[in-house]
Amino acid sequence: MKICFTGDVFLGGDLNHKSCKNLVDVDMFNKADIRIINLEQPISNNAYIANKGTLYTDSFAISQLNDLKVNAVNFANNHIQDKGLEGIEETINHLKNNKIGYFGGGKNITYAEKFYWLNDDVALLGYCEFGKPYLNQITVATDGSPGVNPLRLEKIQSDLNKLPSGKKAILYFHWGMEHVWLPPTNDIKLAKILLKDSRIITIIGMQSHRVQGVIEYEGKKAYPSIGNFIFPSFYIKPPTQIFYPNKNEKNKIKFISRYYHSVDKPTYKKWLWINRVSLIIEYCSLTNNLEKKFVIQDENNNKINELKGFKLYIYETWINILSLIYKLPEPLYTIIWKLHVSQVKLTLKLKIRFFSLRQLGIKNFINEIFINAKNRIK
Image (cartoon, rainbow, N blue to C red; front, side):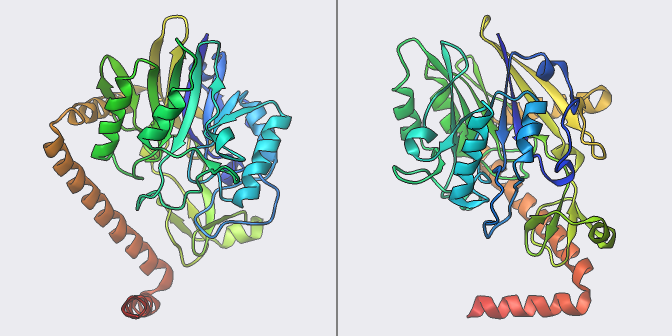
């Protein structure tokens, strides 16, 4: 049996209410026996929208999941709550009614930590990091309320201890920082601790919106981030809310950003090409082997194809370099990681400031800086 795993999937934006039949032209995905995705959104028809950067669609997304022949979805991410706690339960009901499995979240912690069995011997477990500066708007499931399965070593080990003897698990993680190539030092340490566990086959991660390198340890592999699989462009209204403009409204939107950030006017958010490259991981239950395939989403028609030619060579080379960097001694790696994060933050801050200057004009931009400064003093 061949099982394929993908990264982030969002079915709104430019794909809203559009068929996903023939969207993926990749044999590894289409010929798999089981297809698992990270569902980076709730599926909900209710009017409530969380007060944060949001990703969501209505129930038409179910037909799109059926078009893609998805068998199960991972809930353990920071956007499954974007329609509130009721949105999580509504998403679950839509999936159940269409016989699509889920894991990593649920109507309470008992359901969030529940195994999703791929076959008689291998189960899936999903976890989402929380309480970090870069992942802090997370609703963790409790005994009496919906949310995600929390990513903590003790929690993972407790869940693994519930596995029947001789059974194994594949872990889905939502962790790390956005738009960086290097996972935090503690994430690499955690991955190595878990890879030593004979019950774990591999770890598949996401959150950075790009493919990161591979952590190899004890003859096994962890993939810190496999990138955006299906993640079309979308529209943002101030400050960070996704929205769906009509044709006339679209024609009036002049601003395009390649980053997801606060905006002052309606903006069209398009991904950089490095954010449209992702990995499909294939697990063969007969041989216990893992294979990978680089794919890319077309910016204009959203189709997913294999990455080929010179871009594939460049990307594979870069991923190999990153994988070597992960093997550096911890003190040296931590220095490199901190420098990289600082560079990314500074670069993004400057680009966003320049974008805001374009949207507001010089006078309004300066006024906003003074207002923000006064608010910080208060």
